[in-house]
Amino acid sequence: MRAQMKSYIARALPVRARKAFTLVELLIVIAVIGLLVALLLPAVNAAREASRNTQCKSRVRQLALAMIGYESLHGAFPVSQTASGPPGSGSGCQGGFYSWQARALPFIEESSLFERIDFRIDLATECNDGTNGLIDEEHPHAGVAMSVVESLLCPSDGFRGHHA
Image (cartoon, rainbow, N blue to C red; front, side):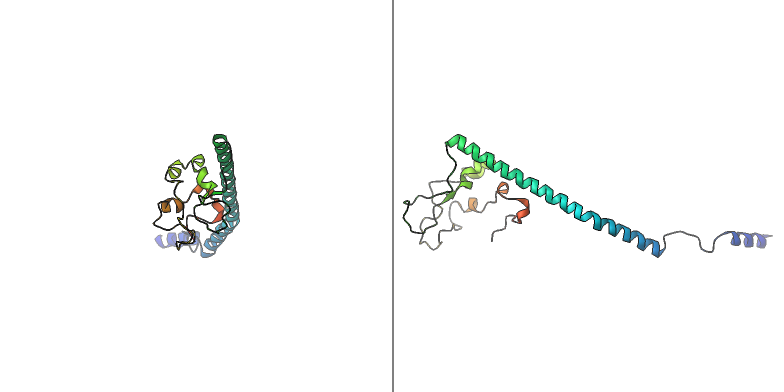
């Protein structure tokens, strides 16, 4: 009787009981997931770029508001650059200049950086001092000059505080 029952059970069950995915099913699932990822990545990248673009526009808008704030306080917009040397000397010296960005720092929430600048000190004391008008490491404003002001950068421009 036991032999008949074993024979009956053996015929009723499939030859192989399913306990897991077959290799083909697994490959199909992986291919479908890969296809979905391939379709979604461009959409995610487009959303990131749109976010960067929005952030850049916001920073430009903040700069415009900073210029308006500067003009309201001083009665004029900041000059593009200033120098303590005689005007029209034609020496070609690039030392001593402070840009409008330095003047705008307190209006773009960088007051602590602005307070570290002494506008009475030239950036380069002499044109022929070997620095070629560039600021050197011993200058009192070297730390300020090397500071990266994030609000002056757009996220898509690739510059992340690395100096050339």
